[in-house]
Length: 255
View 1: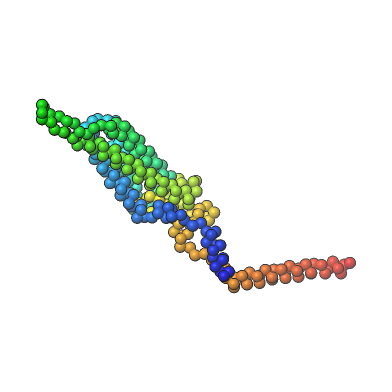
View 2 (view 1 turned 60 degrees about the horizontal axis):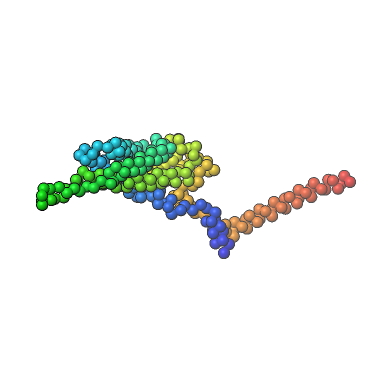
């Protein structure tokens, strides 16, 4: 009975990771998000390029193309670094780039939606009684680019929030600008979240990583431990009484 009570106390005192933290740190979830970002960015680049080339010239669509190219460079470069030499990554740089790309996609979505959203992609042309409806494929490309720009904004918002939540939970803010080789930080492979931290920090600097918390077994205080603790306490009390007695005896002799 006492063992069960002590086990419950230990479990309640240990910080248990929340379900959303386990999901965000999951490598499979990270790959799903990263692959979706890559595919969506390729589609936006192709659709906006077609629209800009044949439908209408717009600075907003040009900015969307810039955002797509910048995003592809980020995804390719950091994926290669993550696979080849993850120790040179810096968490603060990753956070800033994720936030910057998220803002870029939000601005791109709003800008092209305001310009191309109200347009009609069909027009009726003909002569006399003869009429036919012409649908511009480039106009439809603009509409599709708006949709995928919104999708990319949501995807990068998820990846930024994932990286921010998992990093702020286990690493001090002053360590954000140190390379991973120095601070022991480890990302999951898609660079979507912080999965664990090494031993470079003291025990008071960070919380335990999620994997360590899940795999750790609490120490159970059994009857033998309680008996040993009681015996030590009794011995200390006995020694204290003997010391007081020895101190009081010389004083009595002097009197």
